[in-house]
Amino acid sequence: MIKEIGELLKGMSITMRHFVTPPVTVQYPEVKRPVRNRFKGRHELKRYDNGLEKCIGCALCAAACPADAIFVEASENTDENRFSPGERYSSTYEINMLRCIYCGFCEDACPTEAIVLEHNYELSFYDRQSAIYTKDMLIVDVPVNGLPTPQTVEPGIFNKAIPEMEDPK
Amino acid sequence: MTLGQIALWGLVVGFIMSLVVITGFAYTTLLERKVLARMQARYGPNRAGYIPLPGRGKQERKLLKGFMQPAADAVKLFFKEDNTPAFADKWVYNLAPMLAVIPAILVLAVIPWAGDLPWLPEQYDYFAIVPGLNVAVLFILAVTSISVYGIVLAGWASNSKYAVLGGLRASAQMISYELAMSMTIIIPVMLANSMDLGVIVDAQKGGYYVFLQPIAAIIFCIAVMAELQRAPFDLLEAEQELSSGFNVEYGGMRFGMFFMAEYMKMVSFSAIAATLFFGGYRGPFVDQVPMLGFVYMFGKIFLGLFIMIWIRATFPRLRYDQLMSFGWKKMLPLAVLNFIVLAVVMVMAEEGAFDALQQAVLGIFG
Picture 1 (cartoon, each protein chain N blue to C red):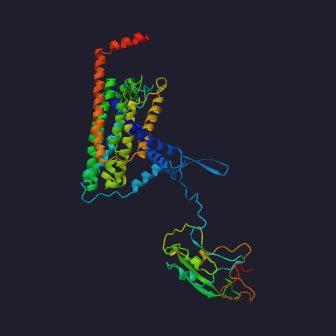
Picture 2: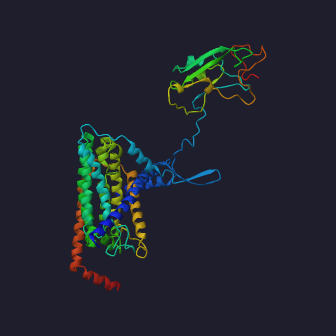
Picture 3: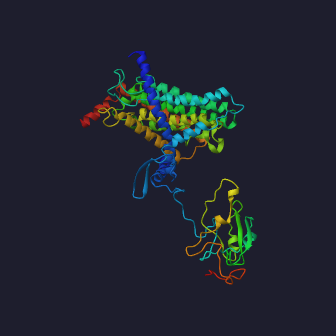
């Protein structure tokens, strides 16, 4: 009897201890927990330091995608209208975020490391149409020393289908 | 005082106290959510309304975050769809929430809130809606027994199996625990030799009855928890078994009335427990400053509510057979035994059986 009452009081003391300790809740919209480095969130299309897009419109990501979420349409680069250092660039690049399973296969398939799954996880929308992220939404801003695409370059610098340079100057 | 004056007093004070207590009920829900949350290492509702304070540097400071939550809940309940099941007994279905909520408020009529205030009418010794009612304890027992009708009728009229099971459980549980509660409610009446709650509170001038009769006080508190159908005795709305028991078919403000009944009963039973066993409005310096009575009374009610919430946060729900055997095999015999022992001791004291003992003690110390 005494022992049982002691056990009841022990339970009460545990709840009281939690009552006086501060809560562990993260106040989400104001406070955001940092994600891990290798977190796979929303995709980003990267640029080189000079502002050219890394994506060369090869559509290997679309081929690798198990959920068939990616649609790529490529167009030819010209030296007057140059988007990427390769032969072609993606004139349309769409990812359906309702289909994407964030597996990161597109990242693995990309020959130029143009598509990277970054740390943004706030992907909510009111209708299906806005689930489709277009190239404008995916591509990162032009770097500080870079120029916006399309750029006009001197002929003969970029003459390969897949650029060799890690970061062409 | 004429009859008209008494009625006017009851109406005016009743109106004011009802407003106070209904506001108190709304904030009891907030208190429960907040305290439960903190005991589970959460914040609880903290979005609806705050009082801005001047910031310290960059840091924004907010006071009483979430204090408008009861208003938000009320608005939500009023605007929700309030439908009646097709095969429900419509008349009883509409009556049941009222039957649940009215007794819960009615109990507060006899609670003494403060002592002899200077502006009270001469005939009244203490501040209450109906002061000096000489059957106040019987009134409490009678009115609280009515509230079970609201629950049983709600369960029956909903024409739903879960609801009727919840209602039947409620009636069985309330009858079982009402007995133990009645046996302990007698004890302050015996000690104070009156059923007038003001006299009972005055009789606790020397010492609260919780110190004189701790077993009775504990049994009373447990029986009250069962009577209120709060955790760990909330079998009639056991979510895992009965979804939500007797009120499963109710929605909107009619559900809100059951909700209100539950929390109003929490407030009123806290007040009754405070009055009967914990000295009511009594406390240090209450004779010099009678207004302190309100403070002590509200403090004691708050403490009672907090302990109820604390217990809810701690203990798991009893099984049905545990509930019944605890009520009938432990609580009731203990309450009856306590009652008989006290009765015998009181009669012996009156007949002078302890005179020799008293003389001996006085002889040693005197």
